[in-house]
Length: 115
Length: 110
Image 1 (cartoon, rainbow over the protein chains, first blue to last red):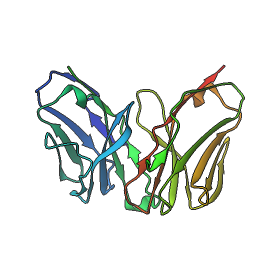
Image 2 (tube, rainbow over the protein chains, first blue to last red; image 1 turned 180 degrees about the horizontal axis):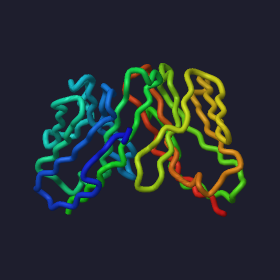
Image 3 (cartoon, each protein chain N blue to C red; image 1 turned 45 degrees about the vertical axis):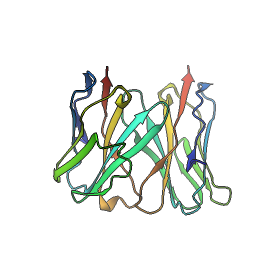
Image 4 (cartoon, each protein chain N blue to C red; image 1 turned 90 degrees about the horizontal axis):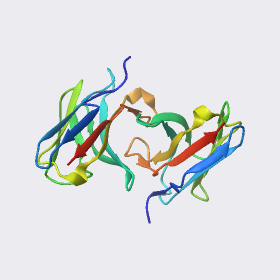
């Protein structure tokens, strides 16, 4: 298995532009998570899906952030309009029900810089 | 009070030393306790997990959970330069949201 695949790995954009981050979870995993990591705040859960349905989006900072999971093999996190304070590494993670102990497998992350 | 506290201060040790990391937490309902390792520019990867209290050993790594003190630890014996990474503790109630610590950067000096 190729693991959790994220794209792009790096994104540099200007304030006000739309940013779309993409994630392909591990085949067969039915839960998908989006996290944001910064030095100041560490890893923060933004939203998670179970069977393609958003379960908890309480971590989404504001309306500028939106996430979708149109099918079991693809999810997007969109920021519109982007702001410099959105600069962070965004991780996608997936989990299968059989993992038992709430074990997440993370992707390599998308490093976002908003100028 | 934060749910999970982990002192993010960097830790430098000579090769072969024992590395000791710990986290404290406030939610007594936490059942699953994990340690993730994160290499630079990579995503976190699961290192070890334990359920409820007790010790778990895997090679050079030992995880301890003391639920009465709300305290968990990770020990790395005979540390190697390849152990240089950031170590994050994480915990949850069942399959609910994982709460992460901020992570400890460990540098093992050859």
